Length: 104
Figure (cartoon, helix red, strand yellow):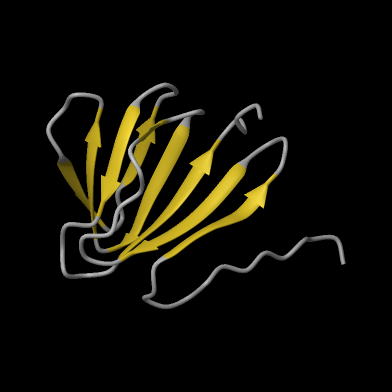
């Protein structure tokens, strides 16, 4: 078998999982329920954030919180303050890709 298979959690429970973490890419999967959030932090790489379901509420640097629905793909540069949360009843599911992978 040439390919390598990765699996991610399916469901509605809060999940923050690192699917792939190597020298090329960080591929993360997240599920957040209403009022759940990530700790405020700064992006440590070029980030691509895909909203799979629900509505993402995100504040970047000093901007007001913006909302993005399923099907949206955000590109956030390195060094940006991020405040990621789910302010809605519907489950929020995201894929977060950091490329190139941040230096440890």
